[in-house]
Image 1 (cartoon, rainbow, N blue to C red):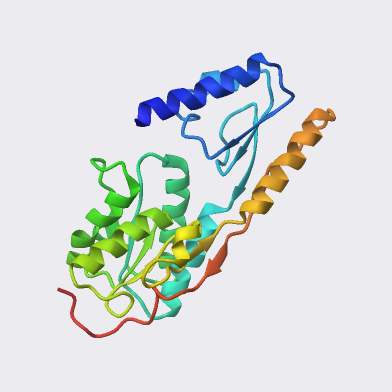
Image 2 (cartoon, rainbow, N blue to C red):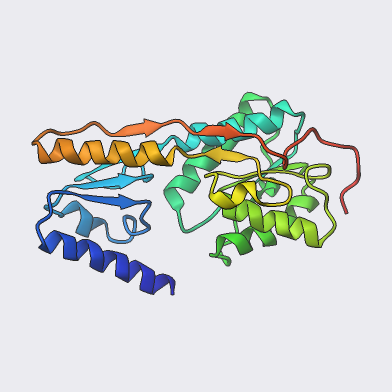
Length: 242
C-alpha cells in the first residue's frame, strides 16, 4: 500500500510536468528523499508545503518544526515535568530530525538530563498510530511523566494504549502532539498539540506560485506553529505508574 501511494504521487507529478503546467504545489511529500535526482532535474517549478530544503530547484513554505517542538516541550517543562519522552517516526526523516532537535534543545536549555531511554524510535513500526501504541511500555519503564509525540496520530495511538492499560491522562502521563488535526479535539480527553497554520501555508504557497509564473524568484518561508493547550497535559502527580 505504501509503495503504491508513492508511485501514484510520482505518476501524478510526472503527468503535470508533461502537461507543461507553470508550477506544481506538493504537500508534505515522502518522495524527495527517495527520488532526489528526479526533482532536481524538474523543469517545472515545484513549491513544497512542509518540507524544508527539499531540493535544489524547489521552493518551500513550512512550519518551523524545531521551534514548534521546542514550544511543546517547554510547555511540559513549565508544568513541572522533568522526565519527558519523545515518540518519533522513521518515514519522515527531515521533519523528525527537526522536531527531535527542538525536543533536545528545550531539555538542554532547562538543564534537564538528555536520557536516550526516553526517546522511542523503533524502525520496525511504520504506521504512526501503532508506533504511538507501542511506545507506552518503554516510556513508562524510563520513568516518563510526559511525552511529546511527532504528530497527533502518534499521540492518539499512545493515548489509546494508556486507556487500555489503565494509565490516566493527564493525571499519570501528560501527552502533547503536533499538527492539530480535526480529530485532536475529539479524543478523550481532548489532545494538547501544536497547531499548523494550514490556511496560511496554502495561501503562501499559492502566492509563491504566482511569483514564479510572473518570472520572479520567491523567498522560501518558514511559519510559526501555535501551542494549543487542551486536556492531555497537566502538572505531574505523585501517583505511581504501573
